[in-house]
Length: 492
Image 1 (cartoon, helix red, strand yellow):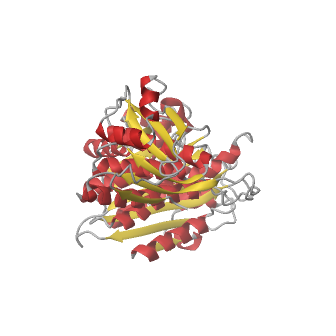
Image 2 (image 1 turned 60 degrees about the vertical axis):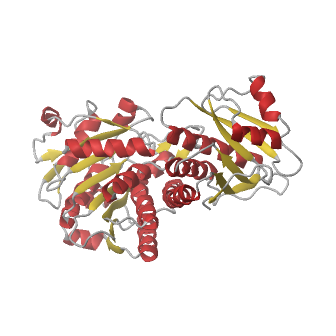
Image 3 (image 1 turned 30 degrees about the vertical axis):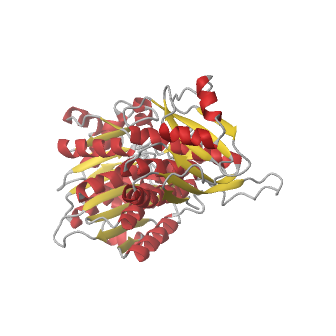
């Protein structure tokens, strides 16, 4: 369940809340608004600041009991000295919501002084992200151990117009993030290609979008030999899903968002090591990002045309699975030598990117958990960004920065193409370990023809194997924010 988010004007003397969260910068001091809170709390905040029990560093928290009625608890959260107050408030919101979940308070009120619509949106997105908790496949704890989940949050601000706009946007984008994270968290035996297709149909029905789903038979007719080679080893029907959102001018070219949807990746014949293979359910986070973005775009009612494209299957070893050394033909006619069956995402995306051309897109952005090499290069902090159009690459980088999903550009120089030349086909699907992220993108470039294109390698950012403070282990929601910010930028 996504957090219920609302807004209200501050009135601390009459405020009734189980938890008041106050976001403060480094070296905090009591101003007029925080003095009003301090008075309602019997001077506890002023004493804590005077003693330097709380100094406002990023992620620093101080929790103390309030009154028996009114403000029952207070949580101070530090936002540090960040130059981007929006992102700092978003982080503070996530820290606060996670703390509220641990306390079991059910509701909270968030205050950060004077806030703009963008800052309210950011704080709301943080609160939604921090409150998110995947419990649907767990047996509920005993009543004695159960804590009330955070279900409601109110953001305080003085400008009602700014409040309403910020909260509305946060709700819409937060729903998209929550959907993407839920899909990522579902195991591969539940979140199948059919499940993703049904999710797309649900989004289409609720927001008046057109949905097209191709299965194995239809893809065979389209001669998608690259995509279908990955699906050879599974009995599950692969799916190519297209969601069309048409709220822009009728003759305007759409933006196309493309996502890799490997619902489970064993590596195929080039099988992965057993240790940690369960994390490969997250190999569909690119597809989850597309569905989450389309959910948010539908809720935001943006005046633009957008097409969401997903290629989904599982990569399994079997007697019918594609083998190293096999040669397949993609739908654009190019022949591909399979060197490594674990380099399967690019084989799926090859035909999806070719399919995207029929929509005459103004820009195509794909997102994929594509290479471990990107994790080695950039760790878990930045998404790898590559493309054929420098202006589009910069536009995507700026969208990622605004959304709190930073990216870093890598080169697509022709010199690297030597690594993926084949002796028997037009191209091979793996160039080995050197420059693995770049050669994977160069492979995709062969199929991203006829439109400006950017590739996001989200292998290091779509999910986390450790608790990040703002989100627990599991899916992060990347690249929903980048997709939505890019589309919003185009819609303005």
